[in-house]
Image (cartoon, rainbow, N blue to C red):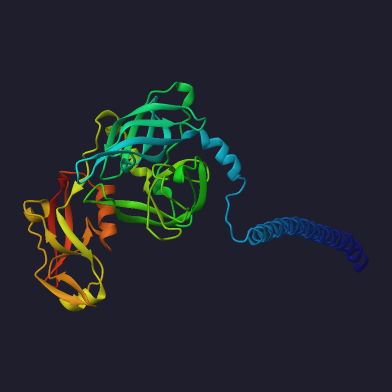
Length: 408
């Protein structure tokens, strides 16, 4: 084989290799170009999505700015969105009634004087039976009770049941079905301080008067002249309440009953109280069907809120809780071995009973003061239920079991 034949025979081989390498290179270039195009469209899609989200956020900011401007324009009067007070009043006004009754009093000379008392109430549909709910102190000691509806029609009524411990009464009214326009009662446990509320009643005989305010506080305790026991878990409201409002509903922004107006602090402005709707719902069955409610738990103590001054006097480091001042003989607390005061001292010019047990918790729940103690008992316990009290005695924390009784 000569040199020419060798050279001529190898030339086609080299040419084929270069063609193969060129093809591979073209494939790589096309693949990279495709990947770049794919990434470009992916980034562009994500960029468009981010632009959409940004537009949405801008719209939300504009919405919040508009809402803030509306609040400023309203001079901080927070009225629920899309709720007209005028429309709410029109929807519930026929449910509010005026209650009047005769009362006979005897003077020290033995003369009998007849007078009238007046209050408010509202219609409620209890399992198909139309009743009127009001305060016990509105109808206490009255006779010949009448209920006047918003249209001016008045009918005789009688008391189905009452509870002086909760200041509640339920009336049966001898009126046509067409007169009754019931309100809905919802649980007051959903209320928060600051919630908007509306009171409607008949202050000073001014029929169908509406006032508005907020929930100022929850879990208050008040004392009525009708009972020696405090009423627990009461709602405090800034809605103006006056004489004659008693028994009227306290409504939320939807026109639902969350309480029943009951009392004011004499000489105050914007300090009113209402029995919570939870109490109404808990007692309504017994009041309608058994004429009374007898399931109030009973501890059998008198006490006072702990203070820094009392803690210093007693040499303890606890400034919260309820200091037991007296224990009722034969009552649940006495049976459980709880101790009352040991001595009387003067603190800030006031005589204070000190030395007794300090209740700081019930069933592991912190007790800050008498309000929280009574509220816990009323909301979470029943007579003949055993509770666990955490107390401070002689500076030492201990636990006592106590079987609750029924209020006498």
